[in-house]
Image (cartoon, rainbow, N blue to C red; front, top):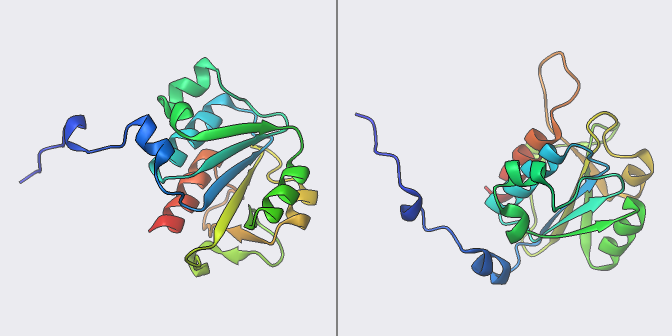
Length: 174
């Protein structure tokens, strides 16, 4: 027998104000030159779903207000705090000074497999996701505390950035 789907009113979701005033999760997202407004909107929506504190939009990155962002974010651009900065590398230095462990989500020589990573309670993390074609800039990877890699088994060498955000955030909150 199939279960009845819950109505939106039964889901007990936070209001935008409740989201913005809830206790911090210790999670921040950084989008490094993610150009597609649809991918940015998806990152906002996923960030909202998993309780991310802030989304940093860096370099050549789509930013609200945007019809395309709103179409995929469905209003999450209003609940998740965000800021645009010109240089991802300068932001990495700021985040480190603020006590964040900075992680590039990227395939590197010594990357940590996502399934092997264990989040430390009480620690703040900033997760950097890269451009749709080139990934996270090498100089940003170099300044990160380490790289985290999603294991893959197919013929392609990468995932869409919005899918990657979802997979990594799920692992962080589960």
